[in-house]
Length: 147
Image: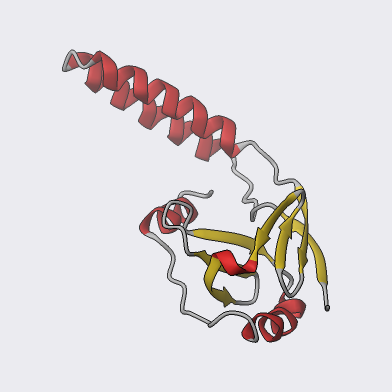
C-alpha cells in the first residue's frame, strides 16, 4: 500500500492592508445606516455581526495541516475519509479536490505543492475518475475581495 504525505497551509492567506479594513467597515456602516433609516433592525444587526465576522476572519492566519493519501483513505489531520465516499477528483498545481458522493458536503479540498501534482494524480487515477472543477460564484467573490 503506497502512501503520500504532505503538509500544507489550511488556505491561501492574502495580507489585508488598512484600506481593506477601512472599506469593509465603511460599507458595513453605510448598510447599517440605510437599514436603520428603513427601520429594518434585523438587517442592521445582521450587518453589524457580518462586518465583525469579516474583520475577524480576515485577520486569521492559516494553520498547517498534515495530509496523507493511501489506496483506501484520505486523512486530514485527525479526520479520515474513505476514498469510496468520493465519486471524482481534480488536481491542479496547488489544489486537490475530492467530490463527495454526499450532496450536503460536496467537496473536500486540500492545498498541495505543485511538485506533488503528478504523483497525487497518478495515485488517484487508479481509484477515482478525474473531473473538471470549476470554482463556485462564492469562491470567485471570496477570492476577489481578498479571502
